[in-house]
Image (tube, rainbow, N blue to C red):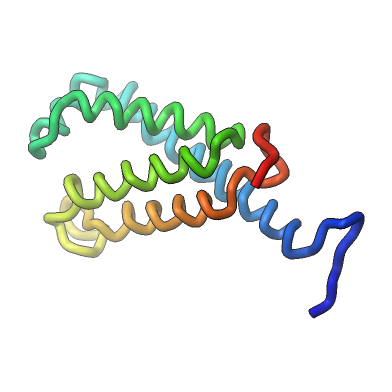
Length: 141
């Protein structure tokens, strides 16, 4: 394999940094928008009510909204990426199990199946493995 290093940085390292940046910023923005939708459109009370309607404590709706908004901001910044990505993967698996699990696999099913949130959970695990990347405030792997 050819080493395409420039100043001690290999092509593989640069590609991993680019991948981390793309995943961090795109998923961070998606989480931010999703959390703000809960806050501004569905309202905190409405979000808590939905959680209660599926048998979960209403307080979990507030925590989920907070995790999505703060987690999204922190991912975009590139701070504590590994930890935040794993927390958000757990949130997504909870959404898949409790919010979409009874609707089948395909997200196109009525009520949305568990396919999409599980895909995002896997994406978050991949981001946790990549870490902050070079273009982040954390600047560590």
